[in-house]
Image (cartoon, rainbow, N blue to C red; front, side, top):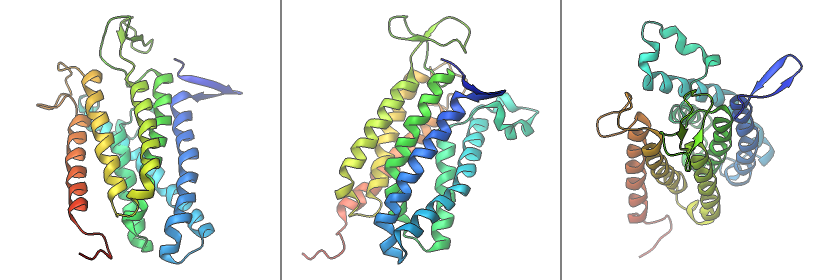
Length: 265
C-alpha cells in the first residue's frame, strides 16, 4: 500500500484521490455516450448535445456526491467530530462513505432530470452499470491507501495494513468489493438489452445485487464489538444495504406483476 501514489514536482498525488478522480474520468464519458444513444431521442436532442449536457450535469453531481459521502462518514463516526463539527467540512482530512456519495449523486440528478424534463427512470437505468464501474475503480484507491479493511483474521487469509500500525492481519475487503462491483458491472451491462425495456428495472437490479454484496461484506469488515454497530446491523452501511435490497425487491416484484406498455391479453 502507498497512500502517496506519485509526485508531480513538489505536489503529492494521493492514491485515493487519484483513483476517485479516475473513476469519474472513465465512467462519466461512458454514461454520457449512452445518454446520447438511448435517452437523447426521447427528449428530441442530438446525441452530441446530450453528451455535453451530461458532462455539465456532473459538474454539480460530483461535489454533491463528495459532500454526501462526507456527511454520511460524519454520521457513522459522530464521536470523532464531537465538539468540533466544523471539521466535517475538512474534506482534505479524508473520510468518505460510499452510500452518502450515492445518495448525494442521486439527489442531484433528480433535480436536473426534473429541470430538463428528461425521463428519470431512463437516466438512472443507464447510470446503474457505470455506478458500479466507478465504485470498483474507487476501491482500488482504498486498497492503496490502506483504508476500508476488514476485521482481524489469521495471517494466511489476510493482509497487514501499515496504516493501522498494529501488525495484525485483516481481511482485504476493499479487494472483495472491487471484484464484486466489477462482476456486477459486467452482469448488468450484459442484461441491459432486456432490462432497459422496463423502466426502473436496471436501477432496481443494481440496488438489489449491490445491496446484497455490501450487506455480506460488512460481516467481515465490521465485528459485533464495533462501536458503530446499530442494533441488529453491524454498521449504518449494512442497515442501508438491507433497506436498499428490500426497496429494490419490491420494485422488481411490482415490475414483474405489471403489464408492459402495449401488452394485450
